[in-house]
Each structure stands twice: as C-alpha cells, then as structure tokens.
Image (cartoon, rainbow, N blue to C red):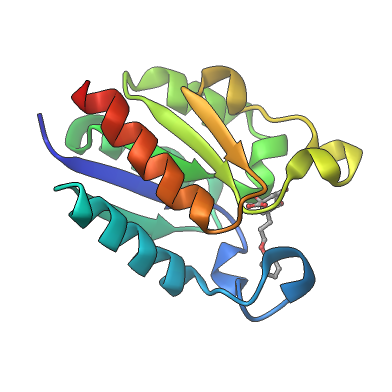
Length: 146
Ligand code: CA2
C-alpha cells in the first residue's frame, strides 16, 4: 500500500491568514501544509497538499488520489454545502475520506449546516482549527494501518 495521503482544499482557502481572522484565525494555508507534512512524516507517511478554487479540478484530484493515495483529507470549503459532484467523486473512489473544517459549521449560518460530503465520508472534524487537519491525518493513518 502506498503511504501517501492527499490533502485537498477548496475555494478561497488560499486567502487564509489574509482576511477574516475573526473566523479562521491568522494561520495561512502554507502553515497548515507544513503542519500536515510534519504530522504525516512523524507517522511515516507523506502527503500531497493541494488547493483549488475550481470544482472540476478538485474532482480530478479526487480521481487521481484514487490511483495514487491510500486516503484523502478534504476541506471542500463552500463546495461542502453545494456540490453533489464532489459527493459523487468521493463515492467513486474506494478510499477513506475525512472531511475537515476549520470552523464549526454547525454554529454558523443555517446554509453551512448541510454537507453533501459527510454522507460519503469516513468521518468529519470541524471547529478545531488547523489542529483538525492533524487529527484527521492521525485518524486516516490509524484507520489504514489497523
Ligand atoms: O471552516 C471551514 O474550513 C470552511 O470549510 C471554510 C469555508 C466555508 O465556506 C465553509 O462553510 C467552512 C470558507 C473558506 C474561505 O476561507 C477564507 C479565508 C480567509 C478569507 C476569506 C475566506
């Protein structure tokens, strides 16, 4: 089994640390990438970390992960609440997928309470900030190695 995880990030997450620090904190996406890389390395795994503002690109990466990775951590950002196509892509690959959100989507606007991804995910982590990415990597590795 390949010891690579894909970490996929959806639209506007490239703006982290530059706007809305009240909701998402001052951490940047490159800080999160570094945290993920270190966490994975400490467990003997590697990551492919990507971000896109385009739905089709994320779908292509989920398919690519199906060929090259053992599991997927995804923060689909706003596509969480809109994208049947992303749910279909997650269902189309036979990989464990953990959905992560920096903020607690259930404590925010009603339209964020619904996720199209959660029904197809192994698990969901939200509201724990960037640490949620580390927890998800630990959980994926635990799931894959047990
Ligand atoms: O809490 C999360 O991680 C979200 O996935 C973030 C999405 C939001 O649409 C989801 O409901 C919850 C938004 C990501 C946009 O991030 C920004 C960062 C800085 C400035 C503006 C947007």
